[in-house]
Amino acid sequence: MPTAVLALATMLAAVSPALAQEAGDRLAPEIATAAKQPKLATARQFMVVAAHPLAAEAGRAILASGGNAIDAMVAVQLVLGLVEPQSSGLGGGAFLVYRDKASGIITTFDGRETAPAAATPDLFLDGSGKPLGFFDAVIGGRSVGTPGTPALLETAHRRFGRLDWASLFEPAIRLAEEGFEVSPRLNAAISAAAESLYRYLPTRDYFLSEEGVPLFAGTRLRNPAYADTLRAIAAEGARAFYQGPIAADIVASVRGADDNPGLLSTGDLAGYQVKEREPICFAYRAYEICGIGPPSSGTLTVGQILGLIEPYDIAGHGPESPESWRLVGEASRLAFADREAYMADSDFVTMPRGLLNRDYLKERSKLLAGARALPAEAVRPGQPPFDRAMAHPPGLTPELPSTSHFSIVDADGNVVSMTTTIENGFGSRLMVRGFLLNNELTDFSFVPERDGRPVANRVEPGKRPRSSMAPVIVLKDGEPYLVLGSPGGSRIIGFVAQALIAVLDWRMPLDQAMAMPHLVNRFGVFEIEAGTPAEQLAPALEALGYEIGLAEMSSGLNAIRLADGVIEGAADPRREGVALGQ
Ligand code: GLU
Image (cartoon, rainbow, N blue to C red; front, side, top):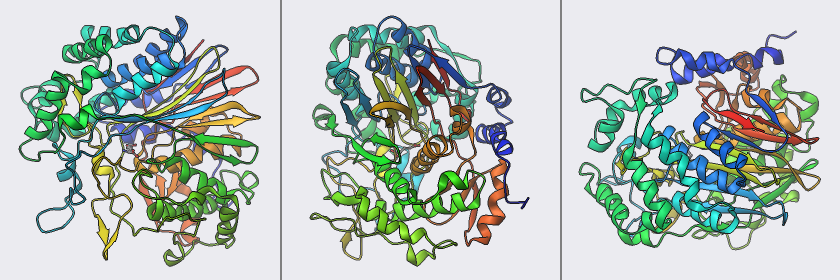
């Protein structure tokens, strides 16, 4: 057997090293142990898969008491904001893809943050016109966009929720008051960010001791300020967040970050609007895959990757063949070229209509017909069917990972797929009334133009930064079959595409599809998940002309599969999540 050929079993055994590495073995040996636990759950009535056991349990309890998937979504998000505060929360944004069983409708809610009205395209340039360093931009007020998550929770609940709004806040309020155990993952995250968390007093007081020592795993942590915030929103609705004293405190914190102040105003908060948008749906083999469109590039780019590989026999080559990865890698490079040229907030930038046009992708897939990596100069944006759109020059968007994804199916068959974020781990590091504020504005391009041509994803007032988040619902014969998404910055696109291929083409069991090592190619370098047997593919891929990079890949694929009356749930073993069903 050629050395580059991997035994699938070996690949699948790779999870715990990857996980241990991601969390830091020195800090959290327990996580590595936990990763060895099987993560597949089966149920008959309903299922919740989320990145923290307490969040999944809150969702399970809501479903068990007669709540629907939207009710559970609210409870899960509110608990995540407490127990996994580094990833998502009230101070951030989210995308929700929802399928309503009764009507058969799939709809999407865009709770993405917006740039302040006072923001200008040079927001992330220094005095001499050079882009700021990533963390110089992130930490402080400059990167904070108007949060969208509270409005998304309320809008989706008003439209589709069943239980009383205030009752959905009870699990999070109770946990915030009684305290919860700091998890090994949270401890590792605090340790990694300790220096920046120390910069702002409310953040330092919550996550660090006076001497700057991170909270230990196992510490019982209470967050009474968060409980008060939740009580206000439970009683008065999202208005309590967007107007009045909470909004005033957010603005004061953003503007008062004296080393890096931001522009957010009370007017920005009062004017925030969730957008309900038509889903983006495309066919892939026997399936239909639906997700959210712009301002996320996630579904469109995943759809392009799958459309480009569809003419090739990925199923036949299988997960152990370098040829499969060449095809997926090349498709991904081409899709990222289109992403950079065309994709941004379509309320501000006219995007081509034909990015998922089947004839366009079929023609473009001929570029994959060779046997080796395409030279960089051949990976150019294509010419999708245009409307009035223009191709834009590449921007500069660093896109580093944090974020959380959860999937829910309720007893009536309603489905939630939601990816939620404050962008970087701990967002801007500014903490107000028990929650962290996002740094989502650094998902804009730091560079507003090149050679006098505007970058599509440049900062503009009121605009939403381009995302990679790709919560999806897959239908088979018109019924939900698979629900998934992941954190991971722009690697989300690779993680989600790979998981879809693993389940739909390679027919891998759900938990193994979540666990298998990642290989991601966005811009030419083939990134292989470090510390996993996938590294054994490196020589074969190198021989095909790729530069190889080993990287930590902290995906958080939390998925549900519905087949033959059984609901399967699987959490990504790289994180602390669980699948809970009944
Ligand atoms: N802010 C990123 C996005 O919207 C997600 C960050 C992450 O996954 O860590 O694409």
